Image (tube, rainbow, N blue to C red):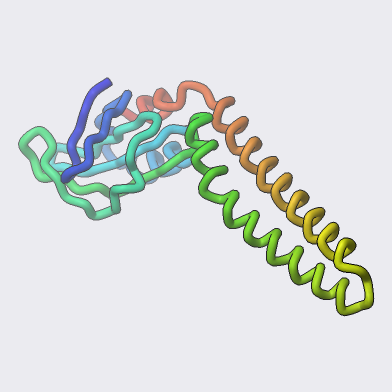
Length: 165
């Protein structure tokens, strides 16, 4: 594993490829589909692609300038993939609280409407609990799907190497 510093962000990547001439647009397409985290950047000597898993690409923006092998470089493309079980789990942890909050809100509204229609409080609470459980189950299923999709991806970095100079 090699290391690249872009401003104060350390990038521990698995693959660095200098792209052939006029391969930038194709590299964008490949990067979106290859399952790896990718950063494309330009220097005076060419365009490069850095690929790997768990790259801190969320800290980078297109247009970020940095020094690469003594040359001025600029980030021209960043692609963040959920490419591991831990990335999938982070997605579940990030989105589940929102799903739960939505489920509780729907449950409370549904329970309130049930109460207004003359039903008893236990029935309203049961409806609210059922809706919360259903929303949580859906959120969990989506998260498991994200993790499974990420885990099934193969050796992604190789696809950008085909565009090498």
